[in-house]
Length: 154
Length: 130
Image (cartoon, rainbow over all chains, first blue to last red):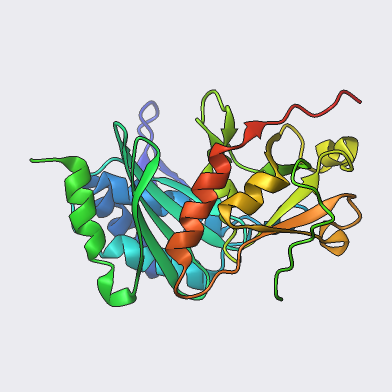
């Protein structure tokens, strides 16, 4: 990249990081998500961190999140159409699962994504489970209904 | 692997779970007990140690600055879990047990509620001084 030096007014060549077309595209999408749905940007970032770390720890269990499970979490997140939500807590459970949890006051919505495509939607109030139901892939959109209730009337 | 409840482990035996992440303790800022997801292993096999047999020096080496959550074998059974020894699953760490729940396609919600019930009986376990 060629720029003009502020003091000498001479042109100078600066090395810039090479960015592939795919990386540039991913950055554009990330920037767009971060502006339009900040909660989603936060969740995807946390998910990325989980995916890139974790291993079997004797005495605790397998903390590795597989690509398949991470993709499944991505599909669950992608089915949520609400723009404004609190950033979910994204954490792993042993055995390779991921738990997403949104909290507002004493209300919570939790989605557990476990290996082998198992997804569980749980609603809690004051720490007590109100309902805990498995979701098939065609039912992921049900998360929108409980998250709308969590957020209250707009 | 079918889970077998080992009745040789008495109900009053204290079992500890390494709380690997902050979110495995509740509440996060000033934890008083393990959180329910600490006992929500994806395969229903929650790895724990019998407190009286565990080597906390070695555990502290392997999991530095981690808290431990404690429940009794009896409260695990009351919540619907089994308790069985698993000496092979801890890479030489003594007193290893599995607090197990037979997870099927149909009972995932029941398992989630059992984990919640068990965690509420738990405490944060201060390991003995070396």
